Amino acid sequence: MEKEKVLSQYMPIDAAPIIAKWIDYFQCEFKIAKGRATKLGDYRHPYKGDGHKISVNNNLNAYAFLVTTVHEFAHLLTWNDHKNRVKPHGTEWKYNFKRMMVPFLEQNIFPDDVKQAIISYLSNPSAASCTDLKLSRALKKYDELLDASRLEELPLHAVFTIKDGRQFKKGEKLRKRYRCVCLDNGNIYLFNPLAEVTLAATGT
Image 1 (spheres, one colour):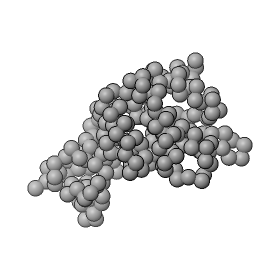
Image 2: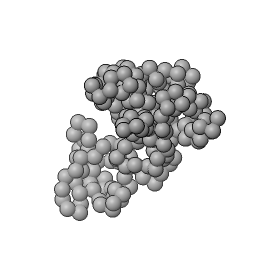
Image 3: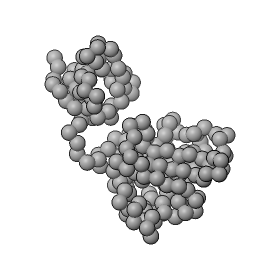
Image 4: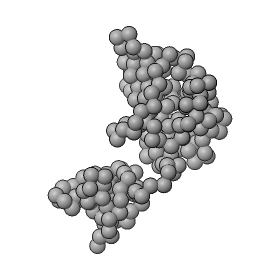
């Protein structure tokens, strides 16, 4: 019950009993970690006497936390089945992710837009992981409102600032990323459409 109580502070309450059972069943060390800029969660396979280890960032909204948790448990199950003989997000991982997501979809734990994005992802074998743009965009709707905007929401040529203080001007979209020029040094950078930025001014 203690695990369920803690987990329910970070994910939808009806999902907590299932995840608590998984932690016990797989004898997994489950850590709620501080927010990391480079990843939402992490899985480490057993090594030198240590068991399975999963960590998930504590600053995710409840639905993103649950999706990330299932994502990492799918890595655990894939490692149990195949060790390191398959690709991290290959066919075997996709199969396990889909299988482990079923109880949450059947119980309608996710809002309809997130549920549809998950179903769409599961039917799209070209996506590299469960953090594809469509699903990320659906999940981000449930983040707490921030001063920051997503880059894709800004108009073309808008000037924006990122967390380290540098200013950029938004350019054209090249396939999946926006080509932006840094106003501090003139260099060109490619930005994810979902990058959180602060609007500084409107360019010409």
